[in-house]
Length: 80
Image (cartoon, rainbow, N blue to C red; front, top):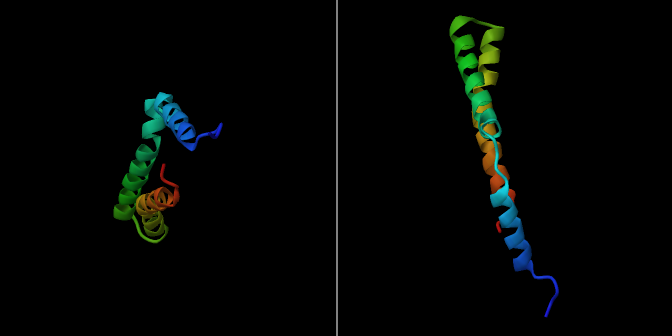
């Protein structure tokens, strides 16, 4: 019998994940920042031309980029 069992390691890791509690700030900081950037991008797009339009596109493009990055990151992580 092996002294190290991969199943034990997975169970210990899962137990550690369940015991770590995150604060509200840790949970909501990224969605709030993305929402703020989107609102700022919309306001800039409605109120000006030139550089404001460029800033609008950049700020509004952040949300889809973050979503795509999160999906790619989730897909490349090994499943337990």
